[in-house]
Image 1 (spheres, rainbow, N blue to C red):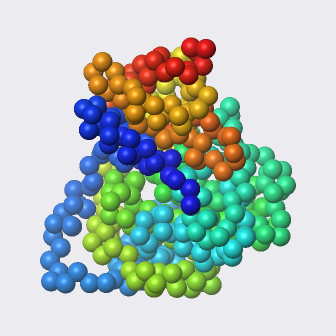
Image 2 (cartoon, rainbow, N blue to C red):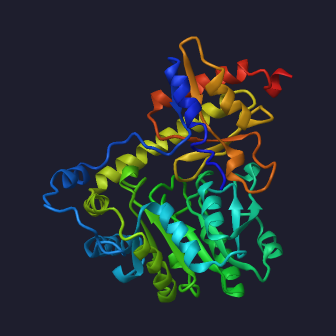
Length: 392
């Protein structure tokens, strides 16, 4: 199993704090925006005398509410096509376990969310990467590169839209190209869409569930964690119109008994969150994005494209080994004010060896003042780093 590039330096960060340093945490997508008041009130109002198991597929009331939520995006999804999971992560894992045999292959544009690799390993599957480039903002690679990888063992394509870690938003044209491949070769299309609310540019969000002719091939991965700023309740969903796949997924759901009861209660209440909350959250992330990208590109030797969605970006740094630089920041560096920075080395978001070695993923989930101080710290760290390319 691969180590998570998002969390593997957590011990070094704790040690830095114990030495009296303040650590700016841009490594993980843990928002600082408050959870909706209605969701917290639902948690406080729980009056059950027994905190019981829920159905393995999740509470019917939550699945009904989610079906109404998808209808806001023009998606006609029935509650029976929704399976509640313990976070979006479990949805990915169960999708792989239910549809792939050991040795089967999945084509994934990279960089990609690092835990996909761990879930594929758990299923005995093999990820075949197609590299996107920072030079064009991590747009979808040419379809010919996908075609070259397709073999008798190829069973699916996995996308994240909007993308984690790059923030890229796939256009309808790009999705239709993927759809043609899926239809032509009879593949699964796993589509992780947990950041659908966060599309900042002119390009609209398009769900894979809306693509024609491949309705039975699409597996939608979803989560309430980032939409409502409630990562800790661990509630996600797997959505599919394919009854056979859902039946296989349910075997894994029954084996783990049920998703978290209290989390489902909070998630159901969250779906009724007023539009004003969602708009304010959207506007705040867009302000943070604009500030972060401008400041990053003002640092000598640093480059980041402008992400169109989610709340991450991948930036190249003037270092040969960002993994080593991130560790050095936590173990050996601090400003005069005893501050340092925690970032996720981007090499862990690639399957291809040697890719992303000079890149990091940064999450803009903190307020602008926090980001400003974090980027000042990054700039000072790069100036002090012995192996910085600009010092060679």
